[in-house]
Length: 175
Image (cartoon, rainbow, N blue to C red):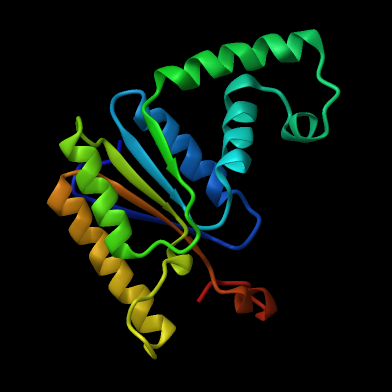
């Protein structure tokens, strides 16, 4: 389980499934209380398609292209009912700052509680300090997300993209 007050970073190279792992965690946690999923990369409709595919067992490609069978529609209806029972809030504003994430957490906690926060992904959080080096900004975002986890006593799960330069190294080890 994810401990309240702890921060977890899930890192991987592009295209290996970080978002779906984050969605799975958020969806499961939302069954026991409100969870916010801050998407800085994908739209709410893209994320909902992934959740419906994940919970219904209908292939994402079929959802996006069409050609669903009656059985697929039945499974999607069941998945829709399950999703309606969860307390998952998807915030898909592209240029979110740490202050935006904190403000939304405060609003959620004041209006009935907060179970967890998921951020997809760390490298796209908007920096409010002009001219700061990206490394310094990411370090600050990590520290601030850990503070949010502690302040609101919820797990914070941050997804992070690993450096692509590792693909050029002989051992392929991430930096």
